Amino acid sequence: MTNSAQALEQHIVGELSTRLFGMEEVMHALTIALINGGHVLLEGPPGLGKTRLSKAFAAVLGGAFKRVQGTADLMPTDITGVHVFNTQQQEFEFQPGPLFADIVLVDEINRAGPKTQSALLEAMEERQVTVDRDTFPLARNFLVVATQNPREFEGTFPLPESQLDRFSLSVPIHYIDRDHEQQILMSYSDTSKSVDDFSALNRLGEDAVAQAQAAVDTVSLSDKLTQYVIDIATATREHQAINLGLSTRAALTLTRCARVEAALRGGEFVIPDDVQRVTPWVMAHRLVLTPEAALDGTTTNSVVDNIMQMVEVPK
Image 1: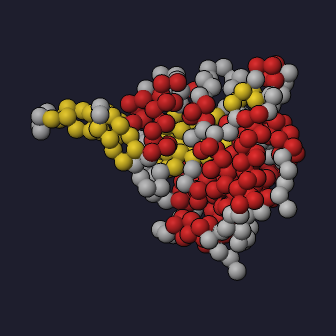
Image 2 (image 1 turned 45 degrees about the vertical axis):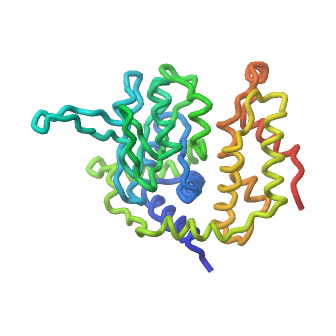
Image 3 (image 1 turned 120 degrees about the vertical axis):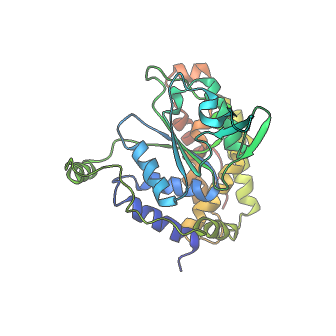
């Protein structure tokens, strides 16, 4: 029998797959983040559909959608909002920025300066914005989908560790296979068709996310699996190639995402496979390598694989 979480994913993937091809794995990760109430970082070279995927995802979810383009001159008030003097009322009024939406796409987030990147921290963690000592709440299902080009590209600023820790998942987007690329070329070769028109996509029901979250709440997590997550987190903190391991927030995110993964496969309890399935998305972007490991060409993904092989899997 299909539970509410599975029905939610089937709807999202079914709608998005009519417009985007070869991205089922990324859609699965987005569904996990949505149910978990977290934010998503999409990483990959330009031109692979990160922005289109974000727009289509927002169209399926419904609600208000705003887009922010990361640039070097983007200021914090450009995204949070600013107080403007009303000459008729003779008082200052707050003009909300693009963060006051249900879905916010921050395109090329690593092209924005550190000060602007830091302005997102409060919004992503506490779902509120503070401007001139006034605090304004954000939407209940506020969700940030950020895209990032590889750091070695010119004009980019590496995201600070505290910023990366706010993203529940970081999902790499790679070049798609030949068949899916042919589908794209054949589907959008007609210049009369808009590739970004997602108005025909069917939106989720109003309570679909809440029902999916209720289904996840019924999934049990044993003490052994909790200890397994703690062992993984501890291993990152003690690994010789890592300067900064997983935080407690990251360990909590790992358990929550594992529960969502269990619900999406129709399970009643979390198994080690659920933890291992979401580990690369949850862990890789949070780990900071030592300078020696970075110089040796070690990657965080290879360290994650090494740790998962080292940590004993509970029976």
